[in-house]
Length: 387
Ligand code: NZQ
Ligand code: ZN
Image (cartoon, rainbow, N blue to C red):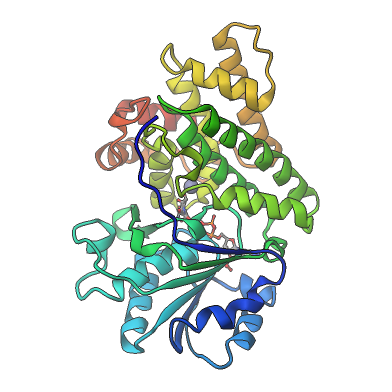
């Protein structure tokens, strides 16, 4: 087991109607709130009105229209400007991972005099950030319980992940009822994202029985509960369990003491959504089984055997490569069964920019250091196998 130093300072307030506690929670920060949100889903489900009503005694400024794969310009830059001009005390993010990720960049940028991109690219280390509170409305990224965010710059085809302990939300409100309205497409994509967060921690050199059990259980829970959510979007218990599996996804708790994997599928997917603005979870679902096949070898096979036997119940009295291949096939079939488009061409990506994307990934994501190292040619092959 590897050494670790772990702290998640975020307070999770979970369950039906928990946002009634919002006014009390916001008291600790001051009067001026920046309310950040997306393109309207929170208005459709009545959450926007509810928040405004609960916070009627506060001074609220708004940053609407944050897009999926949130953009540096205009969203981050506009948000920073409002925070500085209006002397904002706290940012309240209401929405999915994109709203929250954008909010994290704004929180750091608001306390920095230079170009906020310096912070996102680690050219400069943030010294302070505005506090963040969120009401998460989509089970997927785990941004509500981690210190990271991912920001896109369309003009340079960059989609950059960054992380800073200053950016943990102070409080995250998780009410599964607000996820009832999430579309089938986004529910399935959220599941694929969370499953991939687990794969990125599970497929590594050094893990423990404890962590393997935790992750295998979460994978099974995600598969079972996502199907229930798709069949009945208002199944509270299924939405609630799915939400919690996702919340744990990215903050390291699933894999304390594990060795690093290098997060290869995320490294590759970020290029797909940077170049083509596709849905993150769909990109991951497409790449994952191809990546698994590509890296299957004598060194990696035992992890796939464990995964196949413990998650899918594959008969362990078979050749280890046969088990691994069945496990990869079962992964593909599960994604297909929740109606995720399983080819890049289905999401509008063709052959034309594969080499360019592979070069970009190889230069920026450090995947030659991954548990199963990937060179530029491997990345290009995985993209081609995904077409
Ligand atoms: O914009 P609105 O109108 O709110 O609609 C959103 C958006 O169209 C909609 N939605 C959200 N909640 C809803 C809802 N629709 C109906 N009912 C609700 N309750 O769903 C669409 C997608 O939202 P988005 O926030 O983009 O989805 P997600 O939560 O999957 O976030 C994806 C982003 O997070 C990044 C991804 O790369 C991507 O940019 N990630 C962030 C991570 C992190 N911070 O730790 C880790 C992940 O690996 C990931 O990279
Ligand atoms: Zn992800």
